[in-house]
Length: 232
Length: 256
Length: 125
Image: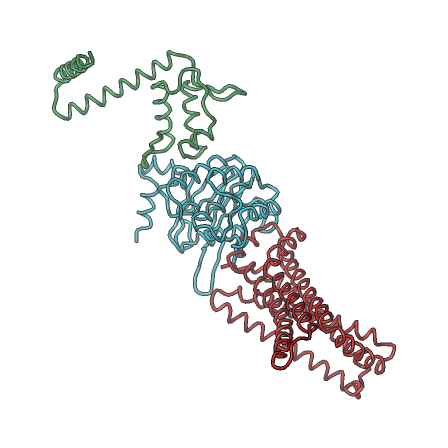
């Protein structure tokens, strides 16, 4: 089956900085991949490029063999780090919005997850705490049956119990046809959930390997390896 | 998809604009009521006068608010955090722009209609007199071309309205191309483009006046030459501004 | 429940835990196992990794897959007995090795174990 993501000599430069430098990357379907790196390493830039929110300076980025556009947006489900839902909406409004624009949105699943986390669709987003808003966004994103999920810091601002629930959701949602890219700096918490991981530093991909391979070869956790590689 | 975007656009904008228009209508009603009661004598006659002023101010205010709101809405929904939601929808950039443009123009037309209707309601006599006077001037000057002229005038107004909105849109689009000083670049784009097209329009009119010597003194040429010119010019401008906006958002998106 | 340390490969630890569950009787012979996804969600691990662990257990005969109905623990008691024996041997080896490191000789170890177990048996009466 065709790889879900392919980057070929992908470059993104700004006037005074190189955000991504000659990135070559292939991500197969059916994998949960960690995109790991310090702040400013290019993680978010790469994710924005995947989602068509930025255009490359040079090189190619292909999702399911196609350039980013309405076709690819149909099969990519994106959870940004920020709150991107309009404040005036109620949770129910956001649900009907997703239902309208995404044919792969599973409303039943969404309502289920909301109930499990004690979230009422009648609530206005304006009145919710940041953590709760993030949970709502995550539920909306995971209720889609997409081919590629891009989760930017999904467990950053939540308590440990919610964190476990989120990881549980990602795992339960798994199917061999789809892949999940998790960009985070909380490595220890998600290591066990990853098939593979990518280290990115100053816009360069330095490592792309399987978690278990590294553990058996080096006898270390990815978290430990990260601290060594990115020592300040 | 465009239909869904339009539906959503109305959903998002109605909650803010409808109250403004309802206030306008309410003020019109109050104004009419106060004036027809005719019980304010002496110093109290300040009250109906004040209310009339408030109503007239609210007319201008509503128009200004509608335009400002259309521009702010475009900015907030496409270029700030909400842009992450809108630009990851499986829709073309042109659809996003079209939905906002159409809905903004709708609101402006509604606003204009409300202004006219409430004014007619509050000051029926005055309005009818003004219209009669205008029509007669137009009749005497232009004869059979009078209705044509009014239509041309309306079209020119409408297209220049669309241009106003599009100019803001393209300025916002230009601003987001840059990583710093976005607002400065937006303002520069706005002023720059505005100056350029005013300049071009002036030059063309000057050329036309040299060709047709007594243009400026012949009011009939208004209908035959000047309005058609402006219709064509403003239409061309709209196409240029729209194309630029669409190009930037389709091929040069730089969401922060 | 699923306590996994971070330095060793995940799939190896999953195999160990599943074996322990079979030995302890949490999974009885012939029991049906939850789906890969359910197990992975319980353990909060990657489904592919869980799949790898289950495949390994299948290879050694502890688990078999029925074409349509899923995965089951083997009903073959001898295999399970063998597993228990292997686990027991491993425990004894580790224990005696630690005791030897503490300086005990073999006959001292046996004496100590017999005494402690007898005392415990007396207390229970």
